[in-house]
Amino acid sequence: MSENLLKIQNVKKAYRKYNLFGKEISKFSALNGLNLNVEKGQIYGFLGPNGAGKTTTIKCIIGILEADSGNIIIDGKNIKGNNLYFKNKIGFLPEQVGLYGRLTAKESLQFYGGFYNLNENEIEKRGEKLLAKLGLEKDSNRRVGEYSLGMRKRLALCIALLNEPEILVLDEPTSGLDPRGVKSLRIVLKELNRKGLTIILSSHVLTEVQEICTHVGIINKGKLIREESIDEISKEIEKKSIKLLLKVKEFNKEHSKELSKNKKIKNIKQRNNGKHEEIILELKEENIPWVTDYLVSKGIQIFSIEPQKNSLEDIFLRETGGD
Ligand SMILES: Nc1ncnc2c1ncn2[C@@H]1O[C@H](COP(=O)(O)OP(=O)(O)OP(=O)(O)O)[C@@H](O)[C@H]1O
Ligand SMILES: [Mg+2]
Image 1 (cartoon, rainbow, N blue to C red):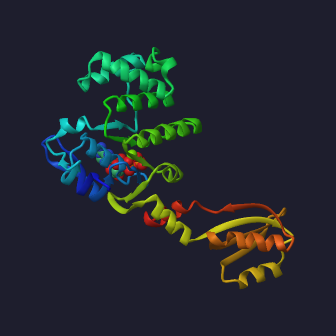
Image 2 (cartoon, rainbow, N blue to C red):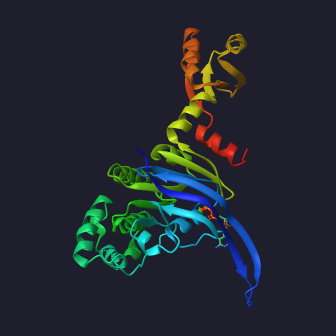
Image 3 (cartoon, protein in one colour):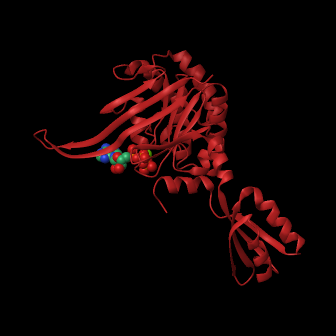
């Protein structure tokens, strides 16, 4: 049975500026009645364009900012006035990792672990395991100032996990990481999730969300636009027509006419790029084999087949008002 772990209800948050006399001189509403639901065991991807309000929401969840109105309920408890209780439940990886350059990784863990009232031995034991899991054991006595961005992110993740939280919140965890770093982070997060950790991560990298998340919430201008499982979104994507670009040889107008006659293809365009005939087809994914069979049966050589756009990207752009 699914259990609700985080519920955000009609949350509003504005950034305000005041003059020297305390009079409000500007106000920008970043969250405009945001709702969302995360259940235990999910990897929830929080998706939205720049400025949508992802970081603001995350700061409200972990208590760095206080919402102006609405409710943030974690495990059945409203976070208002319960800050200490929640500090113990949530691990947080900020977008900009700020660590002390003079401390080594081990010293950093001791320093931050102190905030959780963990004793030195416990921190050391847990710290060693975490540093090994994130591939930092060899560098654990080096000063953090000498670390690369990827290493700092991994250390910050160790710190976020030190207190064995129930929820891990990560703000743009893969930004600045190289492909290997992205892949190893993905593996670590999936493993932690299998062991019961609920994960919330913000991103504007759609393939990232499609790859790792079980659920997705799309936000724009401080409001939730859609919230569903990746499976549901995938079903929708399957039903939708997609665009395919095929590079072929020996494809002529007759073939194009024959393909267009069939109801399986919604739209067809053809152009010559000097080397190949390029055909752009609009069709349902399930009809791709039919097209390739047809081309092969006519002796047409196929050089490449590429989808024109990531389908989640299509949905994202449509829902957030892009073109
Ligand atoms: N301290 C601040 N003062 C004033 N406005 C702010 C402040 N922080 C954020 N904002 C504004 O609030 C809106 C939401 O910002 P937020 O950082 O939450 O977006 P985001 O979805 O995390 O974007 P990104 O993908 O760029 O990280 C933006 O329009 C931003 O300019
Ligand atoms: Mg942000």
